Each structure stands twice: as structure tokens, then as C-alpha cells.
Image (cartoon, rainbow, N blue to C red; front, side):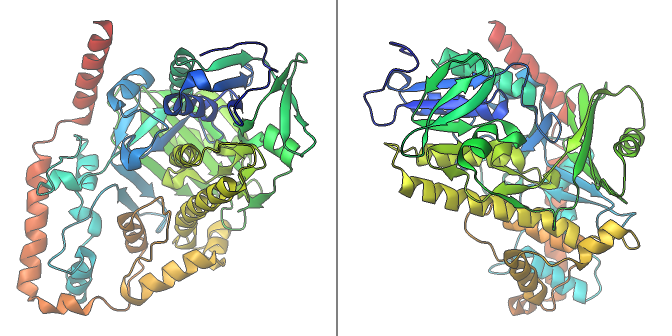
Length: 518
């Protein structure tokens, strides 16, 4: 990367200087993605960061995301093996949810397909028909991902659409700090300039756009486009552009978090756990050799001390490290792109992570930025489209999380009773009414979660449509029984051949490290 002149030199191109403020995952993921997407010699990409303020993830230091190769994401290269090995990550087939549908129930939210339809009739309509005739079927029992997760097995999906392996989908559990460190090395190797030092303030030009930022040492750094990756504080976006924040506390009631890490000796399971309790819920997210636990709670119901005690009891052991606590305010900026400043990560939106969406949405936001990277500072069209896309993605992800609270079955507990009684966003209300009517999932544009995720969430919370597709009546009961039994038998046969998740990780990490050493 060329660095001719000083950092205040005016670039010849209308927009060629990108300044990223922040030192955490959002900053370095943005920097690495930009460095891959543009000719770095023609652009100046600079990350201004304070090592003392590492911008740790606001909901614990680990997160989950969908596959790196899904939907053509630019934000991470598809070399999952190296990322898993270097960050101590694991694969996941979904989420086990305990205490949500009612206090004693546990169910599984799998990634990937559930069952197999017959002709034009979707599998869940076949199941609804059989339930009407007295057969107590559970959708997740016909998901290979769910069966494999519970058996502690894992392999990547097959590419042959005729194979049941192709019905599996998977995600990743990643250590945000280790991943940020890896991306920092990659970005700097690609020519991204790193300027350690605190951010003091932004300086606006005559047109109202940000002209430069001032570092804590007084250094003035000019730019054309500024990315605010300072986390929930949004020090650049909040101070320089006065962008407004849309508060979601009316739907997502938890306003505090506590998190901690425990060391583990056993092989990590290929799923996370989200366990509800009277004042909130706890996430257990396993990695190699350790598990991150994060609890979310209502501060007027539970103190941080009591929440930490609840967290420790959920782990069934002592030996916590990296204990943290603090406020959370779920919501989003009404416009993540204001003028020539774009908020990314928690500076743009923070969503209750029961649906593992924050890291995935960060990646999607970076993709949107790369697709709409402006040619000059007067980029209203690009900004409007970026705000439309990210706004839809944030809102639909929010709706999926809100549905967990709205459909809860924890009766006699003030927080959860209020959640069942609350009004929900109009987009979610329509989706709920559509499913209750005839089992139809109304998917909007820019949905971050697929139809099966919504379907399983409705079903496990006991939402039963008033009617099923009339096409399901075109089959004899015995034919439907034989079909669902055959589907499950095929899955169980494939399950027996899948490797143990811990063995798969050991071979992968051993091979990757050996290849790196060689």
C-alpha cells in the first residue's frame, strides 16, 4: 500500500480515503474485507484504534454465525478450516432452547431442512395432517442436523442434492477477540494502515460531512468515508452525525448482561444452549477448550450479583474467568449511513442474541457496503439503498427474536407474562396471523433466517394452524406414515456414518496446523 505524503494529503480520486475508527472485530473485519475487494494501492484504508479499548463484543467475547461461504459473504474468506483452527472455534448444527415454550421443556432449533415433502405438499403440512389423525409427530425428529447435534456428530453437507446430507446446514462458534486479531494481521499484510491511539473527536467540513478525525495525541487524519466501529458507544456516529437510535426495549426486555468463561476438557458439542429463567436467559456457547456463558436479565428483577450466581449455577462448576457485566440496549440506528459516516456492528444495531444474529448481520452489513461502495462523497442514492437493506435485515432479525418472547410459555412470572401480552411489530403480527391461519410462513425481502427456522419456532411453541394445505388430503394415511418413517430411517442410517464432532475437529486442526507448519 502506498503512503505518499502525510495523512492529511488530499487524494486525487473523489473518494479514495477510508478511515475506520475502532479496534475490535467490526473494525478489522471491515478493513480485511475492503482490502480484498479494492486495489489497495489505489485506496488508502486506515484503522484508528486504541489498544486499551479493544471494543470487546457487548454480549460476551464469543458469537455464532452462519457458514462463511453462505450467500457469497465477502466479510470472511471461505477458509473455514484455518479460521476454526486458529481461533479455537467449533461447528454448530443449531441451538438447544430450554425453558422457553414452558419452564420444563427443551427443544432444538436446527439449521437446514426438516423432513421431505411429497409432490407439491410441504413436509410440515403432511405432519399437520397426521397430527389431526392422532399421530404425535415432532418436526425436529425429522431433521438430520438436530439428530446429529444431539448425537454429538458432525460433517459438512454433501453437494449431491439427492443425498440426505445436503439437507444439513451448519454454523460456526467463533472467539471474537481471536478472530479480530487474525483479521488485523491479514488487513495489515494487505496494506491497511494501522494507527494506534485514542479517538478524540470528529471535525466537520463546510458541507456538514466529516472532514477529519482528531486523535488523542492531536493528530488530524483526513478522509472521504468514515466507518464507526466503536461498538455500543458509537463515538463517531453518535457525536458527529447525531444519528438517532430506535429502542427495542418494549419487545426485548433484558437490559443487563453478565458474562464469563470456563475452561473445559471435554469435546465441545455441535450446538449452543439458550436457557430461560424467571428474569431472563443464559447462553452457553462452546469453543475448543472453553465455553463462554452470557446471561441477559431485567435489572429491576435481578441484580448483577444474583445474575452471576445464576450463571455460575447453570455451569455447574466454579472457576470463572473474564467476568464482565454491563448494560445492553437492544435496537438500531434509524439510518446506519449518515452523510459520509457508516456505523457497523454494535454501533449500528444490537440484537438479543438468542437467534445468533449479531455476527451474521455484521457480515451482511459489510457485504452491503462493498456492493454500494460510493464513487464520491455525494452518495445519497447509495446511502439510501444501504439504509433500506440493512434496516430490513435488522428488523426481520429482531422479529425472529421477539417471537421467542411473545410465544413463551412461562406462566406466573412477571417478565414473561408481560412479554406474552405485548403488542409486536406489524411485520411480525402479519407473519404470526398468516401461520395461525393455514401454516404459511410469510417471508419478506432481506430475511436473514429461512422458512424452516420460523416454522420450527412456531411449532415448538405450540402454535397449531387452524387448517393445513388441502393437497395433503390427496394421500392415504398409510402412505403418509410410510413416508415419514422412511425419511427418518434414511436420516438415522446417515447419522451412523457421521464422525464424532470432537474427532472431526481434532483431525481438521491437526491437518491445518501441519499444513501451516509445512
